[in-house]
Length: 212
Image (cartoon, rainbow, N blue to C red; front, side, top):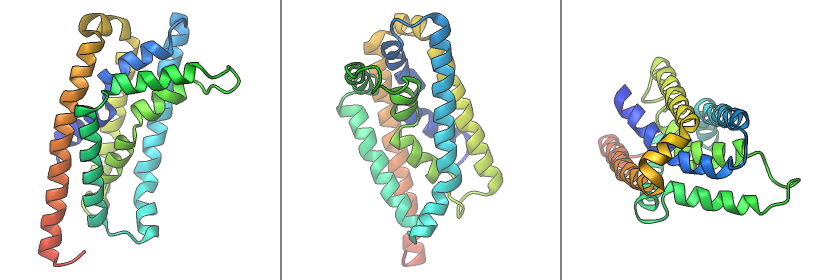
């Protein structure tokens, strides 16, 4: 997988544009300084979560004795189903804003920081992003240098997401919530294609090897 494919995959599963309406909903009533601090904290937490899966995801798979080709097939199928929810279900802005609204009903002492939930997890560091980062750093397919590039690519996408949160007001004014939902569904179509390609590649390797 080349750098562009990795960038597109991470862009789709992280979906910086889709996070903008969620950011606006969760930071309503905050001062400008508080919103910037929340954006930075959400970015830092989501990067830390994905770096954890980048470093330890492979170790966990090996410890469980799971075939990497089996994991690639399963991961591709899950990413495909995740893409279907982006296309046919609630878009990311809609579903994450609903989670934010439910969170707003909690009393102050029970409510986690909006930078952690729902912005960092599950909006930026979504289950799809966690799975994708593991697949993109498979030790049997990618050298350490390639995995470092994937890590840097993830940080770049997260930095763009942070910039989008800084510019949330102008962006949502330009495209609106409906525009963000459309972008999310287009990203879902791209992710579905990437997921199918991942499954087909694994099945081809399995057929060549004759077994898992």
